[in-house]
Amino acid sequence: MIKKFLVFSLMAMMLASVLAACSGSEEASGEDEDGVTTLRMTWWGSQSRHDQTQEIIKAFEEENPDIKIESEFTGFDGYFEKMAAQASGDNLPDIMQQNFGEYLNQYADKELLADLTPLVEDGTIDVEGVSDTIMESGKKDGKLLGIPTGTNALTAFYNKDMVEAAGVDVSDGQWSWEDYEEYVTAISEETGEYGARLMEPKNLFEYYLREKGEKLFNEDGTALGYEDDQLLVDYFERNLALEEKGAVPNYDTIQQIKGVEDELIVRGEAAFDFRWSNQATALDSAAGGKPIGMTLLPGENNDQGMYLKPAMLWSVSESSEHKEEAARFIDFFVNNVKVYEIGGSDRGVPIKEEIREELSADLSETDKKVFEYIEMVTENSSPIDSNFPPESSEVLGELQKIDELVMYGELSAEEGAKQFRSTVERIMAR
Image (spheres, rainbow, N blue to C red):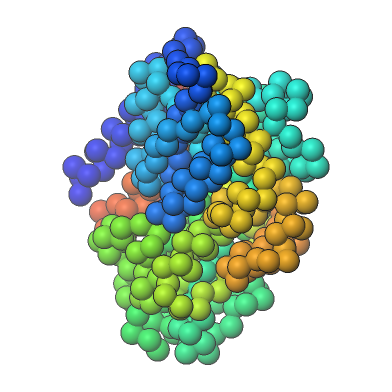
């Protein structure tokens, strides 16, 4: 265990130091052959996303024969470590899938991403009609560093059969954390399976704070945004109590999962799973017909906790010698209905209203479910928090590590909450 945590910490420190080392690097070289520009492009995701993206790339190349795209992809685990290693060699890809919040701000701080504002202003990337709120999610310090791939939200996925077997109904999204504990326990007792997947803290503790009227970081991103450590203690203790009952799995079980397609809810071994709405495609395709519903996360003030965010962003590296060609791919992705016919809602609900309207008449059952869910969140949510400091990826990595220590019994909930605060203070003081 301790060895694993030391490796995790070293990886987080490596990511920060590598990005720092490449600040201000010169542009990477690139070559055109036979009048064709070759772009490197990278993303993370499930196998279904990989397959869809390859098909989207093929469609783009057919319409743009002067551009060839070499693809690189991986799962989310290890993605940003891989990008950090490439950044250290001044070898970032031309087009990269980027994450809102901690990672976008970290890359922005090191000036690794190109400002796409001129390419929007000259029409290379057409975002006419996209709401200012959506576009703001790709901005940092006045620069447009990413174009959202689609709109996304946290969701409580649930196995309808397992939930109904326990006499539970959460379809209207009106349920408290106390209800969650009761339902998860009842489902586990009724079915002999887990009532829910163990919550992961990186996204869900932030939601938990928002639902309580607090924030993870303060307004200027210089410290934690909440003062009462009892909030984190309560979060830990709820998970501990459910794990001790056998109603949720421990980390040993979670660490055996080999990706979205292998999740417990897919295998019928857990009723609830809290994750991003755009993962509905991968879950449904792997579930083998198991009926999976979507509803708001629990909380008496879940309209305060819920928020819309970009599923992810397309960014162009500052070192790219082919920014205009890279921008042409982003424009194709945003404005071509064929992209969403291929990929559905896997990268979120389209940011352009005309694309959404064109798709609405012929949506798959999964995409219809996701579109309806995003409408539900739109009516029951609050603005996203964007005050993530450059150090936030390291902070969230520490939260993950401490969560594991608490769940394994190596720290009490109180010790974990105290250690998290002191660690964050040390990180932010550097």
